[in-house]
Image (cartoon, rainbow, N blue to C red):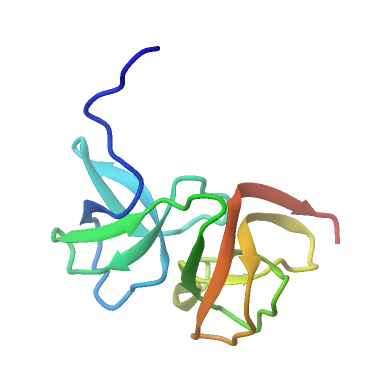
Length: 143
């Protein structure tokens, strides 16, 4: 067995904010880089696979804390619209600036969505929702 060293354990990790993430806790961010330094910004693509949940926001260039989802663990994110227990939750459409990084129930409209878990409680727009992480998967709805 090969021993791995110099790797991060599961849990929150410090990373540089690539944009102002003040007050954005509970939203999803995507991992990128600035000249080789890891950075995060609010998700701007529904198909984004490099997702982290922002736990502690800060101004651009400052250190924030984010966590990669682990299947089988409960988390809290911010709902975009009405979500009910048992709904598959996916990223909201980031084309609307106010929805970037939020979660929504899997739509019935045709499209490809990034589903990340199952809602564990009922919530509406802007509320913190508990969900069970199932792993990140692209789901195509035929409509």
